[in-house]
Each structure stands twice: as structure tokens, then as C-alpha cells.
Length: 489
Image (tube, rainbow, N blue to C red; front, top):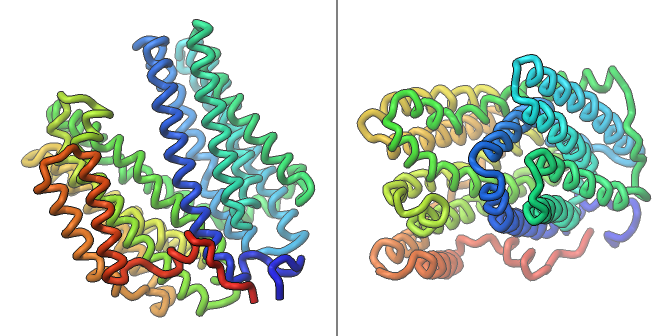
């Protein structure tokens, strides 16, 4: 039966895996491109605005980040899961209701944040910036909700393009405002422009495929919020545990140690998005399989684990080997003592891939409450280890504390998955096959006296060559890269 027939959903086809793998790769490339655009434009803004105005800009951005996290409330992942397991008109109705709920929550959050800034006596420019950037947040989160349709149908190429369009618009706006010698307030409008253009492009793309008007349904909204509440709480705790070390260090560590940790933390925080981009591409497949096909779910989770172990080890190795260059670029030569800190923090990229894999597995099974306890355990672990390790070890102790918390979270998710269904726990057979790859790449980084950029390239080549030699590269990864999708059946 051909995939092009209208009654065949891509999530039910044998081509779904290949699309998800390629889509995850495209989203990662798009993310790197967005970072490059930011690196090219933000320095112009910081130098133009100066210390005071740029501080106001960062303050407003932090307020909106918090509001976005609270109003997002896990609704995007809930939306992807529910859209993936529904069909036809039921999908359209659900998407319209989800958009309506997102609009109400975000408008309320933005108005509350603006009112709080005004009542608390914040400077007028911060009040104005909070409202303007909040409008940008509203546009962005609305677009993300409509994009649930594209993500659940594995149209991840379009998702990547739309995200890149937004970042390109913002970066171009920043440069244009600098050239025009603009004051601070117009810079807040760049987020509005980026969100608006991305939303319009998304609506044009979807105009012939789905009903786009938001829908009001109080009963459906309450049901969504009840479902997502444990996950939203778990996500909020998750935001805390990863940042707990840097917060506690500001109280218990010398300023220099806090600064050394902060420089490495910023790099890992940026690279740490990659596991979620890669693994989330397969989330719709997991959700569909959890509804219909236990064997397919087991197969998909095993392959996701294999890819996560491979990619986690490779990226962690590259960050560790390239740490001197990364610190030099991001923080400067005075932060050279951050290099060993970054190398320790690179370990959390391995656990980050595992956390993402098993988190999405539990989400696909609607085990929302099972996500909360491991996140709480990770937060407690991060706090205790930071208090114990930072006084004697400084920034390196904080890095070990963060890795320990990530490890506790990964193990907690795995235990929750085993309790749900022991057959879903993946085989660990790939791990010993990765040992020669990691050893070879690490040896190159440790003993070859060349520039770190060259060493990263050599270590990555050696890693992948040995991974292929020891059959640690899943064949599905190669087939997807070469577009050798099996025929739909």
C-alpha cells in the first residue's frame, strides 16, 4: 500500500523512523545556524546599548523567560502526544482548543508580569519592555502550538525553516536598529517581528490542512490542565535542579569560583538543547506506538537509546576535547581555569540524551506523574552535592554535583519506565562497543599537541571510525542519512 494514499498516516508507515532521524538532524543544524546568527548580531547590540541599557534588556528577557515557562506548562509536548494519537476532525478540534487555551494563559501571564513590573516600581523602560516582549512571547507560543501539527506529522524540515526564519528576522532587526542608532525600546520589538513573521508563515503553510481559528471549550481546557499538571510541575522542578548549583554557589563559594563555573555552565546550557532536539523528533512515533503497537514501541525505544548513547558520547567527547577553544571564545583567556570545569560538565551531555529519551518514553505512555519524583530527587541531589562538594573543590565540585543530579534523574526515569513495563527497558549492549571509540578520541585530545579545533575534528573522525568498526552505529541511522527508507506497507 503506497504512502501517498490518503488513509495512511506517516506515523503508521515504515518511513516514519527515517523522517524522524533526518528531521532531528535538520533541527540540530538549524539550532547551530541560529546560534551563529545570534553570535553575529548580539555583540553589536551589547556595544551599542552599553552596560546599563543592555542590563535592562537582559532583565526583561529574564522576566519573559519565566512567564513563558509558566504559561507553556508542558502544553506543547501534551499537544504533540495528543495530536499524534488522534485522527481527522478530532485532530483539528484538539488543535483549535489547544491554541485557545495557550492564548488565554499567555495573555494572562503577560498582563500579570506587566502589572507586577509597574506596581513594583520598575523603571518605565522595563515595564514597556515587559509588555512589548510579552506580545512577542504570545506570538511565538501561538506559533509553537500550531506547529504541533507539523511536528506530529514529522514535517520537521518546515519546523527547522520556520525557527530559522524567526532567528534571522530578530538578528537582522538588531543589526538594522544598531545601524539606525536606535534607543532601547525598539530592540524589544525584534521579538514581536520574529514571532509575527513565523506565525504568519505557519498559518499560510497550514491554511489548507486544518481549521485555524482558536476554540473555547472550558471542559476540554480543564481536562488538558489536569493531565498536564504533574508534568508541568516536573518541568518546573527540572528547570530548578540544573540551575541550582550556580544559584547556591553565589552564596557559598568565592566570586572567582562562581565565575569559573558560570562560564562553563553557559556553554553546556547551550549545547544541552541538542539532546532534546534530536530525541523529540521521534516523540510522535513513540506516542503513536504507545497507543497501537507495543512491539513497535519497544523497537523504537531501543533504537532511540542506541542513537542517544552514540550521540551523547560523541558530543560529550567533542566538548571535552574542544574545551580550551570554547572557553577562549566565550569567556576569554582570564577564564582558562574553566576548562577542567567544562570537561567535567561535558559528562552531563551523555546523561542528558538518556534523560530526554526516557522522559519522552514516559510522556508517550501518559505517565506524567512518574516524571515528578525523579525530577524532585535530582533537585535534592543537586542541592546536597553542591553544598558538600563546592567548599573543597570549588567550580569543579559544582560540575560534579550537576552531573550527579543528571545521573539520578536518568536512573529515576529508567526505574519509572521499568515499573510501567519491564519489556521497555532497552538492552545496554551498545555501551561496551562505544568504549574503544571514546578511548581513542580521548587519547587524541590528551596527547596530541595541536590546536583544539583540529583535535575535535580528529577525535570525532576516530570516534566514528571505531564506532562503525565495532558496529555501534545503528544501521537505521545510516539508512536514514542515505534516504534508504523501507517501502511503506
